[in-house]
Image 1 (spheres, rainbow, N blue to C red):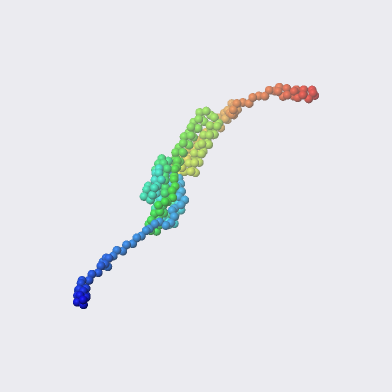
Image 2: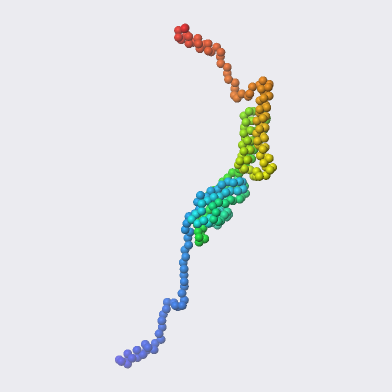
Length: 252
């Protein structure tokens, strides 16, 4: 028995020893998971202003961080930060957008996004639409209307048509000067001369009307009457009414 125990102990001492590792201690993986999201607010109060047929003004209030990107799309809303055409990127609060005739290209859809300090763009943004009619187109319509009234006033020599033509041309002249809505800049000398034309046409209509009425007065004609002449009352009606009253009160 003792021989058997000694033999077993001897075999255990001579048996090869092994160690099992889950992995090599010198091999390891350093894994870092980083999740970055936008923290802040989008720009607000994005407004679109008509400046001219070819320029649109934009203003906004920046979000939490000052960096703002404005994008535009023609005829449809801007979907995301990669959609449409980039109008502006920076720290300002306003900019101008130059395009072809705003009355022809259709509605302009703008969208402003904010960027945080890590370079992340927030996905929502704020939107604004600019659907303008060309002021030059309206100005042209007014000029055509003025010409029609001017010709009609000379053709029919009517007082109301003359006043309408004169007021229309005065409105054109003042709108041209104050509004500066046409494509002709007022800084050019030849344009400043053209501005006098609406006022000349306006006074031409008025002076012609005045001259016509003066000649009518010299010929013994009265001013043009509006509407039909009033009907003359019966001169005997008053006497008939008096006789009727006398009968009712007893002949006194």
